[in-house]
Length: 196
Image (cartoon, rainbow, N blue to C red):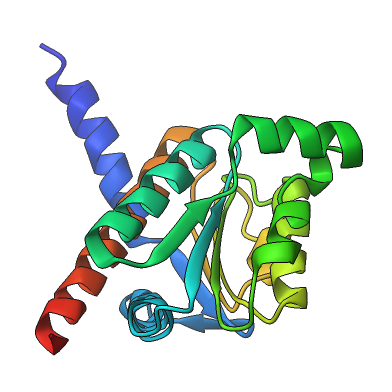
């Protein structure tokens, strides 16, 4: 029986989930207030205005989270949502402009003031994610970052709201990012139902 292993893994994930840090304008927020701000941002900007959209970027496992969440926000909330990880676009942009520019080159022509970018990176150091966040800033978008590993990672300084998972385990960081986004989605759905 692997009871101890199971308890260790699930206990570790629960600890990580409840010790994440959320900052806005370099100020650390209460965890619950931080999540509430993200929910309010998405519900206020995207769910209320059909002209606003959500954009998701990530690499590897974070790209899978980005795609899944873009689809869920689109289907369940009617929000214009997209993940910039189509293979044809990525390989074209990487070939023509370098991999560090694959997201920035897609964001710049389509992002508009007031849109929301969710930038997901476990390390918080991926050059293409950092440049994507900078492109969104150039277009006056709201930026939510989701990172992990080191508390001083550069992505954590790029967003309006920054959710940092205090772990160096890819599994824990990615699982936490997915669960937070899924919770935010659920809360936005609830807010939309209450106001309809």
